[in-house]
Image (cartoon, rainbow, N blue to C red; front, side):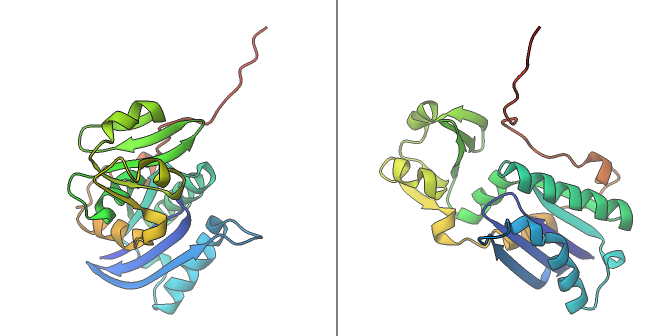
Length: 210
């Protein structure tokens, strides 16, 4: 089974190609001054496949980070996954960035807290998932194992019992996504039509009323 997994929802693009549970190739791409990292997604997928003697038609499973995270990055990743799955007939799985970070942290019962701007955060643990005000999560975060981002690290570094910034730790999020996908068994419902982005906090919309 050839699996292609990729993530453009967070601060880098992660692309991993693997066969069964073995990784064949892995690439990380940072944003630069001229281009956002997700702009390189399609061209880098093509390069990885060619380098490993594969074609899109060889892909059996596609895995993608469906968010939360960058609105543009989520749309890019989900759109590419849907188009490739439709074209190749591959099964496709969406995985939350919160689940990826929790697994990558290797902490016991981690609490994931990510900046959602406007004094909000995305939060995930075994019982809670959603978008909350930062003031609401402060009490919940006390003495917890926390994985967060650089923006919120200073806020929680003295609150939790163990606090990591996934950006500072440079965690292998692409490989973790691949591991999660590799544990899944494809079924009849894992098709491109069912793949949806995870927008926990929808983009702001102004409605004009007459």
